[in-house]
Image (tube, rainbow, N blue to C red):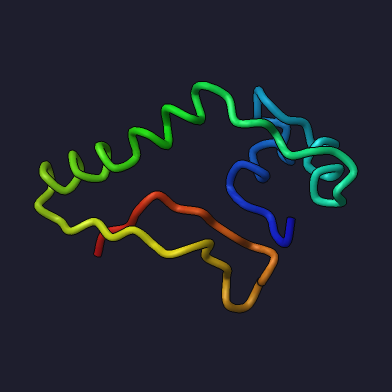
Amino acid sequence: KTGIGGSDVAAILGLSKWRTPLQVFQEKRGEVASQPVNEAMRWGRYLEPVVRQAYADETGREVRVPTGMLRHPERDFMVANIDGFAG
């Protein structure tokens, strides 16, 4: 609720199949509950380690997992929850 992330941006721009700009606004204000976890989201989380390892195997690059949410140092409303990073 303290920032705007990638999924929020897609919805705000009207590019999301799952959320509208109004829903993002209402979620950030605490007026409605956040989107419940669905089967696709659950499987995406299950497969994150597999995808990270596959990328590491294919590229030879080490993939690290961040601890927690990332926030832009100057624009603190910009946040990201990334699955991993290399380099």
